[in-house]
Image 1 (cartoon, rainbow, N blue to C red):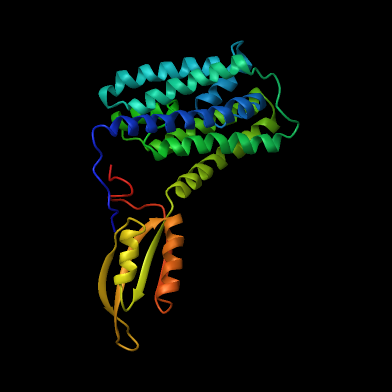
Image 2: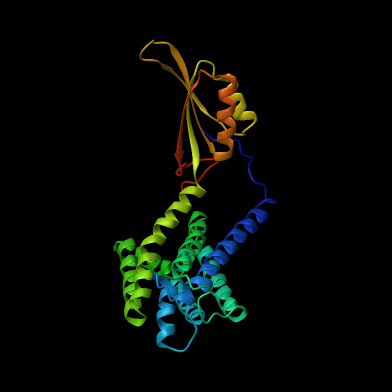
Length: 294
């Protein structure tokens, strides 16, 4: 169930690297748009460096973007000191670019009040945009830096449960919003804290969503030819037997993207209407043509 892929040449690698860092930059832009235009003006504290920055902004005179930049740079230093060469280049890039973008947005589009008078609407954008950006970063093996760097340090030097440790930190920051601001802001922040993980997981699952086909038929040749020649995918075929009639059958297993799945389903319906198809959603396809093992 592997696609037919050509080995990348040396000349294609720079373009692949350029595309990869273009995706990282776009993800950072989406994340920062949600933070600057919707999270900062409403004082939504979902945890992380941005949450700390919002709380500090209320207590001290600097802007949230300034605190975000300083804290992220300090955490990068911590990462280099305690992690060393294992510290991810992508995380460094995203952390620096994201911090610079927020500082630029603060200078070009300074906001002293929310964009609208609808806090629930702005909460939705404050959750969705950063979550989409974070999901894209996670999907390409990067992160936005910040408290993720602390997680990397703890993972390397301690046996702590990293997920629980970071959730406790985020929870403390969110609780702090109730005392530093007001109960309404605190409740909105709690809502964002509970929702952001679900949104991130949902976006990642949809980005990686593939269709897994189990096709039972008598003649697999035309279906496999279509999979090979038209969809540029491969398949696995084996022999089976029906338990009721004991008639021999052939079973085809294949996996592909959603757009290709529609083509294959329509082809099978047209060429072999008696074929039995089971089509399953899966976001964890690991192997050549899909996702790597590391």
